[in-house]
Image (spheres, rainbow, N blue to C red):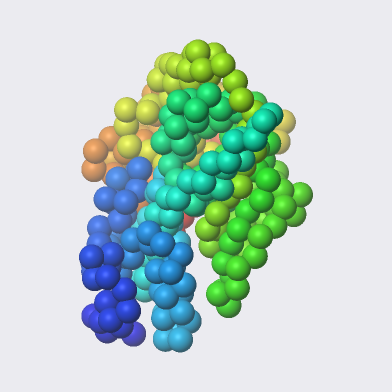
Length: 305
């Protein structure tokens, strides 16, 4: 279906301010890379989500789901059909005697949540204060840092399947593993995340967050556009060390570069294309395998065409 027709159908059902045509995906990714999406919809309520999914299903329109755009590389020819940008930002906080329970919209940003929890004197989320992206994305890939992962605090996850049915599952059913959850293999959209956290001392929480932020600043190229850590940790080896040992720090293809600060990051030096990144990644994989006979895997997700 032509994008003008898709736009017309969508804007007949939802607020036209939420719908963008020919939207540059580089404006919606932390990599600052990506071609145009035919249609992008800002999903701010579950009602809008259900409406768009219903339209997509009835009209056989393909759709792609993104969160805050931090762990993805969008290809240079962009994305066909509809891009759903999940911006479900509701926060429901219930304070019990010994713990706090939060029901979060999947679009809540980790950095915002960390600051809110600090003000409330709620501990246990300090590890995620510097993880870019949203809570839904963090659950999707079981994000983690400093020895803690999202799986350690999640109680339940609510999602919508392709038939528009809503399901809520417990932590044990999420099959969390290193940078993996069951959602990685399912065609579903996470809408809510329930987490449980203990209370803590505000000064200690703030100090831990400051230490984590300083560590990131010193060790990671946070001042340059990237999709976060590009490669997964290896099975029995540290991928970034192997890349470094191959002398690949600073290696460039076009505007894409293996970070000179941390070899596990590919950064956009200003004008990188997705093709630059993909060529760079393939070169890194090839050199590491030739020298160490180790296969390294991407942590970032590649979408589009």
